[in-house]
Image 1 (cartoon, rainbow, N blue to C red):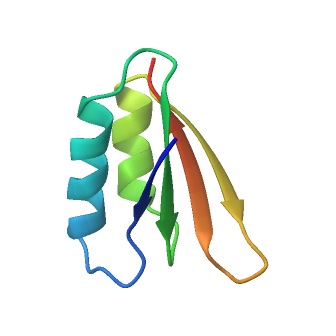
Image 2: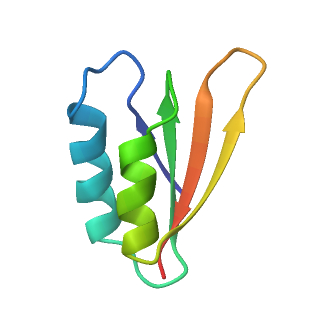
Length: 70
């Protein structure tokens, strides 16, 4: 699973990296996204386009999101 580390990047760079990353996914494939905060606008786009996403806040405060292609 590919990991995109968007920690420390200013918007919209993490969003752009995710859009590039999911463009190459086959149905059922996933990527992992690491961020400093919850990306609410990204969730709306993923939901609209049928992607599944699971969010976890790790003990170190990092938001870890697994995104799976429809």
